[in-house]
Image 1 (cartoon, rainbow, N blue to C red):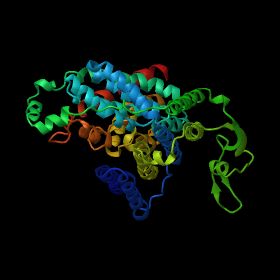
Image 2: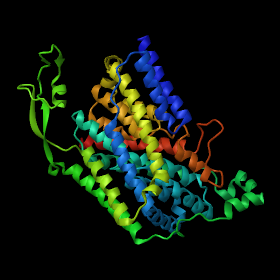
Image 3: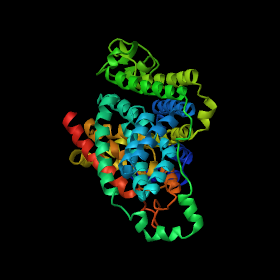
Image 4: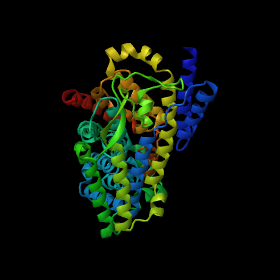
Amino acid sequence: MLIIIIELLVVLLALYLGSKYGSLALGAIAGLGLAILVFDHGLKPGTPPTDVIYIIVAAVTCAGILQASGGMDWMIQIVERLLRKHPSRITILSALSTFFLTIVCGTGHVMYTLMPVITDVAIKKGIRPERPLALASVSSMLAIVCSPISAAVVAFATISALNGFNISILQIISVTIPACLCGIIVAASWSYQRGLDLDKDPEFQEKLKDPVQYAFIYGKTETTLNKTIDKKAKWSVYIFLAAILLIVLLSVFHHILPAYDTVVAIDGAKPVLLSTGKTVTPENLAAAGIIMPGVTQKIPVTIHMYLVIQIILISTAALIIMICGAKPKTAVANNVWQSGMVAVVAIYGIAWLANTFFGAHMTEVEMLLDEMVENYPWAIALVFFFFSVLINSQAAVIVALLPVAYKLGIPGWILLGALPCVYGYFFIPNYPSDIATVNIDRTGTTKIGKYVLNHSFMIPGLICVSVSTVVAYLISSVFF
């Protein structure tokens, strides 16, 4: 047991250090932890989460090309017009805007262009920018579990299917979208009253006495409306939205997808002793394409949805390049593609590390958590949240922990209800979206407190995640 505790500490230390250094360090330091477990402790290496990584690469490539085409600028302009038309409702409208932008694009990093606009509208209206900005940042990341093209949602559907809980992408988001909207609405109701209005805030009024600060806060207007959007940029959005709709429809009507003859293991087949003296499992024979009577058989198997998503997204990127003139070099230089590639490295290292540890000690983990799983299966939500605080990636949490949860015997509908809890990295404000939001607020009302945890995102984040999880749990318990 002491060895297991030491190895667990290696995993947690790698996650902590990766979170501390941020960016590519998340995956790199996880790889260092993996090396210690494999070469020093002799654990068998787990399997890298290649399927999820490929989906992220496809989604990020498509979203990056959309950004390069100017399509995202057009969507941001539409949102800005809405916010400027209803400035008094900036708190709820900004949260809903970043929420739905993330759902459409599959990444929360599209919020960066909109945040300066939210700040400007709030200042012009005399509203404390902390109110809309903090909630908008939280909403943009919470929406990851609501996007049909996000790696987190696709990973949940894929891993669930492999563990006997067959659920489509449309079914997942039909639970998470209304649940997360409830969380956002409750958090917005609280946010409307947080802090003092700018004209009553003594700290802010003192800052205005400095002419330089006054000019910095009120002397410029942040807007995207001065950008010229051509027809090709608009067409790129139409193509992108059509691809998302196609993915959702095919996840529901998957029976129309092509099927291919595939060798699979027969249920109940026993391991086979080969003439070489080696014993192999039916699964190994099936993976090698070997047919043995009573052990494996050839049957038509429908193409997996994670492959369909990759094909559609990569094809969509190609269409936007050819039809709308998007420049691939521009896409690579933009923040959406770069942040997505950082996520790929993080998931690669973190999920591989977790898979190695849990794969080696699954029996001990089952014995340790047996009572909790039997009496309090919903407590898996707390585990998701804790690991998300350390990992800073929702998809990585799902890939690392969801297979473990299924092996522990936790029902799929409970795991679906706990899905909003894979967003917990607002807890420690070191994520790029939170840091960027603090820097964008010219008034200084959005901030990280003296004690780190007393920051602007804490309460909106806790409200959003807790309410969303409760509602998702109730919806999932009724329908699944």
